[in-house]
Image 1: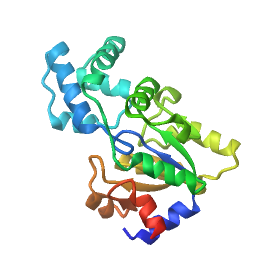
Image 2: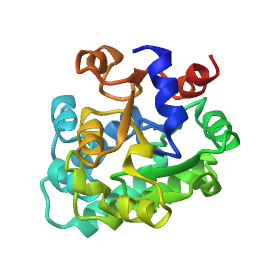
Image 3: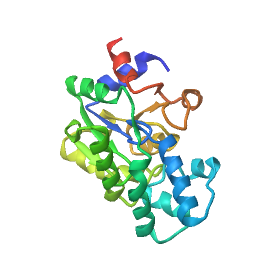
Image 4: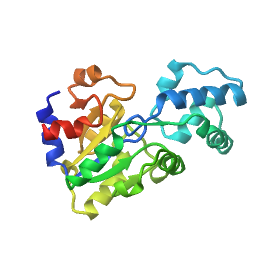
Length: 223
């Protein structure tokens, strides 16, 4: 996908919403290992990569329910919280610089993620991501809908209306085809980033504007 298209999308956007996991931070390697450990240790279940891939991207509580095959979500969440720092996520090396550059360009920034608020705050604290980067933050706690359902963006759309920002003036940056489907359905622009399960070639195959890494948002603009 040409840098010119990415540049145009960024230039026309008043605010850039980001997915969190595998977009701003690397999640798959650490958290798949954590889920396998919890499933084996506490539920006597051996999780496969195929099963993890099938459920990946669901809101955290629904993910735990599906992977561990349990309705006792308070206990599943306890196991998750108790072991999460043993399986730390990775801050992508260009995340902070990219967010800093976009703020310097006068762009508002936000997060719309399927993870819980408590998990997001833990990531901020452990990975050194300042909440001050973001004008808007939405987590699993803020909606009963999840991607690819475009209604996941309803809280964000209400916030945008309050700030006189049209959906067409927004771009959502995410790592999954479900992110694109939800954003498109809500009337937002979308840029895929190939730092998760979906490759650059897959995004291109679906004719979705895409980049290999987050810093390409700035590189294409400056280029």
